[in-house]
Image (tube, rainbow, N blue to C red; front, side, top):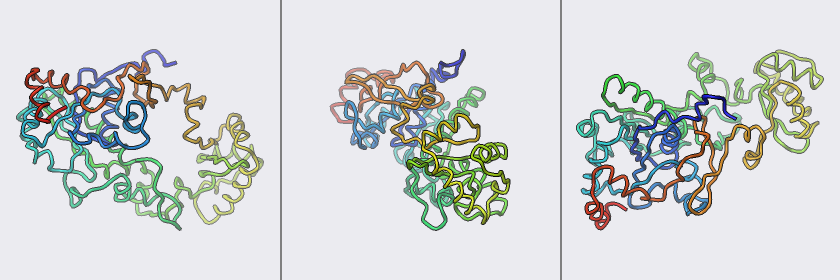
Length: 395
């Protein structure tokens, strides 16, 4: 149960309105966090396929994808053609009623549509515009296409990943996408605070390729100091035996992260080996240490190592399979997963650290599900809305 006054029971951004032009993972993850914090988030999708993520398999209840469902609860959807003159007229009305415009186009696209920063300032001087792109609004790569893997590569983070005798493997997660989204949230929250003092909006430039080096701060700190360890040989990237992964006797991967002397000493005493603090420093001696620890971990089953971890405080944990997470006792206690009711059943959801615990969100929206309501709030009447629909400008 949450503690009294738990932050997850509040919605501090209630009343903040976000016009969200983003798609796929980066922007929608950021606007999910904003929606979880209480903001009204209205997705503007095009009249073609809308947010591409809707169509990525696997599909779940009501025809949208599991990925889309995970990132778009609590939002509304307006389908509007910004390439049509009438659509741009409507968009000009819309931006006057929002606090934040969040976009993920390549640099210059909004300006070509007639909504550069100067025009947006004229329409709404208090508007905060957040631009989330791969490489930022300036620089030689600003207009280059890319995805998460490219940004990790250009940022140097992928070059820290995995053993040195093989190409870096594709990670099982989207660090640049989500990292860029998180920095967008930080920028938007800071801009909202600044606006409360100045009564003026601003433009926020977030590049996904800029957003990931902080995830490898220790490694980059050493690199900036002139020390470039071989890939996979650094303290935190697999270079030492006490910070590594091993297999149990039944083939389950187990992690050991006994970086501090006290944890390494506790582990050694518990498994019956002599503690040697040189184990905590990279070097040629690590090969034999890794071989020795591999034999030790292969002497017990995963269940036995879990019992060991409960008894000895030395940073040992099993590597859970993703399909085990919902039944994990700790994650269940933290209420990390929940089911969200929809018209046709339910969709499974995960919580961020700021997701409210009361589960009072609307389900992920169907394309254009809230178009009429959003346009009415912008001041359009029913005949105007009907005309836009007949022209194919909205649906």
